[in-house]
Image (cartoon, rainbow, N blue to C red; front, side, top):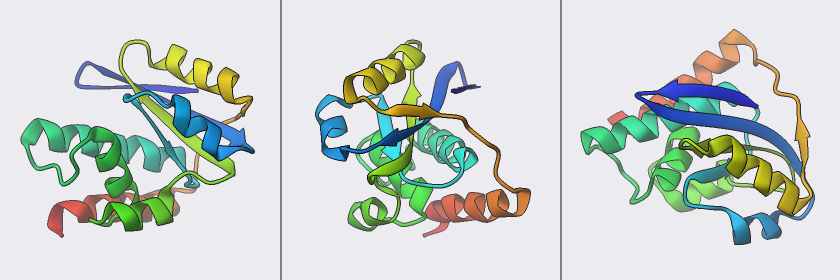
Length: 140
């Protein structure tokens, strides 16, 4: 798990392998999002941008979870964001926000029988490209 802080908010990211994706949606709390993307850095950046957009009142989605999807995909349509970066069977990232974020992620992993995977940094050039995509939502 990666633990970050943004403006006194705790952000925790875990990479998981999950076979039955439908089971996770039944137990996903409001402070946790699941994304099917390659780089943990993209998850972190999209989450920070989503939180910042709510602070500034520039959010496009109604919820932080929805805003994370938009930022991670670089699109303004939730439907498109879900098809691009929404959860799929296999490897996914979980991101939780809040003081009990680590416990929330551990509970999800246990309840869904997912396997936690090691988190590896992505190549710098790939990360830059993904950050640019996430930032596009502000100019669209």
